[in-house]
Image 1 (cartoon, rainbow, N blue to C red):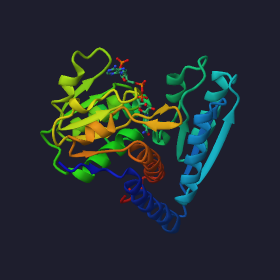
Image 2: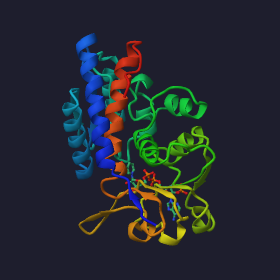
Image 3: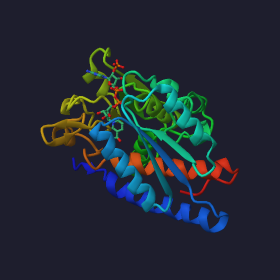
Image 4: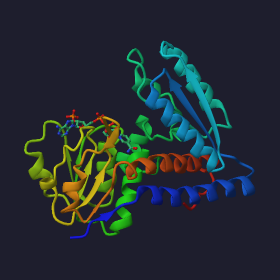
Length: 289
Ligand code: NAP
């Protein structure tokens, strides 16, 4: 079988072009430049790289990007005060608090301070609830990007068996909800799942969001399955996914590489959510993206 490599970089680039078009339309027609504010706490080097890349991508799409850096020993009250200021700032359409936060901060409490209309990460209780209820809200970026990638190789998802490995609030659970909304039969696997290999072999669509290098082996893969590898693991000087790419490629119908698969989609969907938030906050129609 010839495996199809799902080129997340190319799909994200084309999505970013459409987002830039939508942003330019909002500017020309409504005099509105969507703005994204990112709050970065502490000195985690990976977080600094992510935030810098988000800032560059936001500006490239013709939107405003503002960064707020706070020291690692900042109090929770000070972060909450900043988030409340950003909630009240009409020039800010999207607010993202970069994770992880230092241990003394209750991340859940901070995130829930974000105005749900500006919650471009889709992680507030309000947006998580809307996803659960099937209502329109802001959808977490990585799961949203994963669905777009699946759709590049398969349009008819209804009735397919989907297995999501990993049940985090950030990726696994929302991705399972999105697949359910597509009428897939969804299994959500996690660290207590018995016989993961057997569960995975039932998957027409297999999504891995675990954070363990190559935990998904080649013989976990059903012939022709679509594999979405969300994992990003640094091993030595290489980044590798949660799926053994070489072995899984022998059986899969289509597979995302790491890097160059889901990662680029996450930033593109963040930009998309910012444009959507800018339009929705002003009761404008969702831009076509
Ligand atoms: P997380 O919060 O640590 O969640 C990991 C999940 O994996 C948990 O639900 C855990 O189960 C499950 N798990 C752990 N060991 C397992 C095992 N042996 N068998 C089956 N399940 C197991 O991680 P996350 O934030 O979802 O991130 C997952 C991965 O995706 C990481 O590598 C992260 O870097 C990457 N990521 C990538 C992007 C991107 O843009 N591409 C975005 C976000 C995250 P329990 O719940 O039972 O503990």
